[in-house]
Image 1: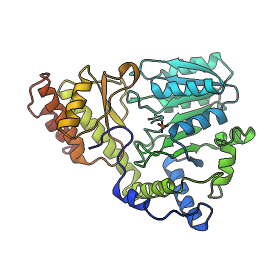
Image 2: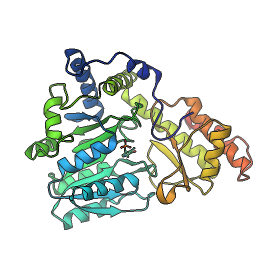
Image 3: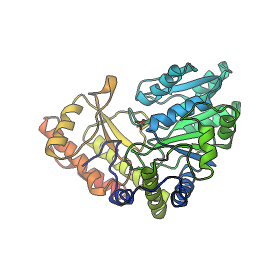
Image 4: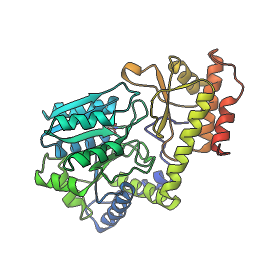
Length: 368
Ligand SMILES: *Cc1c(COP(=O)(O)O)cnc(C)c1O
């Protein structure tokens, strides 16, 4: 049972859709698939433009930094992925400033507002919607609304790799929203996507930058349902298949189900004494803070056939993370909290009495 917050399992119908013979990317057949996929992508982003890139999510992060910062970037660092935006700026000698917090702490809207008021060079802000390092939800929509009131030209770039497909993100004030294939979208790794506002497109076109990750050339090509370089045809076919299915079932249905699963998991784990790590948990995953994380994960893997994630860097051995993204089966979600309770019993932390499973069921199935 793979319950890590990325990669997530690829559903069978997607694997089958991707198993057909390779089609040439410069053909009417593929252009038709590209067009359908692109339209579904515009719909899930709820934005006027979008591009697909043959890269992992970090490629889209890099493309946004290099194409949307003309003067100075403000990067929000409450974890590994926020830290990465700062490192990308450094790699390209792009001036940047960082607001850094502990990995369980969301950035303060006021601090962002003060920072941009005090530094008129800042023309782009880079932030995660869900910072996957700790499973933290940043107040991205509020920040975007406040910043746009002060200066609508400042680009708001939101990394939604663990948010698009998890929840309805209000993209009204966002200029770029990044996502990737292997998390909430349930595909193999290797494809990234960026939703763009009209303002972002105008800024990108005002100063085309880079070669492979040149968004101006991609936008131009992708508007005509092709790509600047060889398209990741197989992954785009898979993306079309998954987005079609999500739309058929209803986007809201997926978001509601994911939220219910996240809530029931948190309640179940709190009921057996687990400490939820982030101050503002995102629905993509549940993160528990405990020094017993490695021991619990080991028991889950060896005895209960369940793979959950640990942490990285300074909290590598201090947290475990359970995925809620994608089409997780109900029985998988209820099994994992039960297995954690059993593991805690085995470690002598708490006597097993079935509380986790009961609280999960009460919340998830009986809607408490
Ligand atoms: C996984 C992840 C990334 C990095 O994506 P890669 O596909 O590994 O390059 C970036 N941001 C967030 C929030 C992620 O969860």
